[in-house]
Length: 250
Ligand code: FPP
Image 1 (tube, protein in one colour):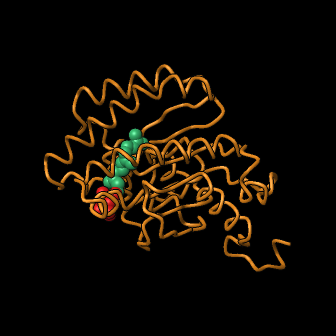
Image 2 (cartoon, rainbow, N blue to C red):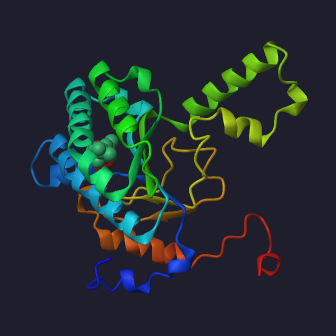
């Protein structure tokens, strides 16, 4: 951990969130402010992903989920979609050594079948290479949306009911959890959204039921390790009651 960061030194080591999820927003606006095309912002956004990842590894966060491409992003101009896909493949390829050095396992959630074949192959390769790493799991949400995942889960559950292996009265939270793309991961403790927008934008709708939400005006390409530490400090100042009273959780 950087000893020069006054923010890092304020973090309590015994209350680190297990899972942090991030809506990385503001790449386009950042690029526009500098008179560049949107993709310039996405390229600089990769550096911010690295900052968040580095800070998360240092603090001992176990899961980091980043919203890299939503179901809705497919309707962006073709040129931006293609550039984003290329950037993803290149980044994943380039970062494999860093993943190996830092014990980072790569996982993906979303409708991966919709991604270009080259992208799918590269992701498969990176997931295979990193499968035994166990310090932090980096989960890329790609062609993902919360509603899409819930619908897919409902379809799977319906098939089980149709086949007679599950009774409708046995459907509960655990059954739905198991049918989601996020089944293997704990729910996020903390959700961060950058760029000053205060929305969920169809991200992890089911999973963030009890997540603490932190909004920051920082545009994603400007997001530093200190910005990550600030979000953690804010999280540590919150009282998580999960529907109970303060006295019950004391
Ligand atoms: C949102 O900004 C950002 C995205 C849709 C893409 C995020 C992608 C990256 C940071 C690059 C690759 C990441 C990985 C994990 C390899 P926006 O375009 O919506 O910005 P705006 O709201 O200012 O228009």
